[in-house]
Length: 344
Image (cartoon, rainbow, N blue to C red):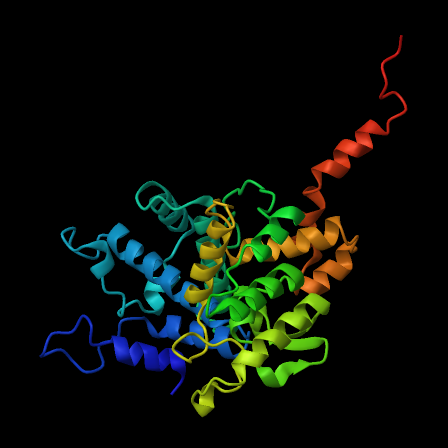
């Protein structure tokens, strides 16, 4: 049994009464097929699969409400979608999809980013139904446009702020060496949060380590001296921690002697940023990844293609956001204009 089908089996009892049929499913079979395909064939991460599941659940609940197939008294989140079948899917129109996006905007106050994610999910699902499953003859999303998103420069720490963050950490804290290592890897290597929490000891070789990146793709992370030293210092403590055999290969452990989870890392990053006097709530682990990329581009003079490989970006267009952050360089360039000085 696949993990998606197992999840569905575990959840199917939620909306059942004691006399309901045992095959009463929460999610439509086509959605389960799509999730399994996305996970096993396309190699999408668990977080992406969960996002697909959540977004499609919202979409089909909206359609049943929009088509007046359920009582208006039923709360939106309690609308059942187990009975969405092929005939239902074949009737989905572009106008209904736009109505859904409008509902997400006006009623549920989704941001443009959230609506763009839902748009991408719906397009991917119906492409699957059309091209792979061959359930529908015409894909209603072919002319579907994504919501316009304003481009924003990445939020990052300056070089001085990064040094302040590392120097401000309490060396007497029991988790100092672990937390220092975590922050050092974020700031020097530009890892994703998911990559950092899954680092295995067996995958660390000299000045490299191998991680599973976005889309379950394996990639090599190169370590500078600061990163190597911080790992070695943490290992002097980590090697003495007794844990279950199934956890022994994980580099970072929580105080409960289990592999550290994403939420714990988010909390400790926020705590150390606050302790350093950098009170901006935006400095999440992902912003530290932005910091690493920005510092490499701005101070290390790393070319955009190399930076793309370091960050594990599939497309260089994603990496190009870092070419717009160096305002000081722009200011200096203008000052070098031969007409910069006033003419008498």
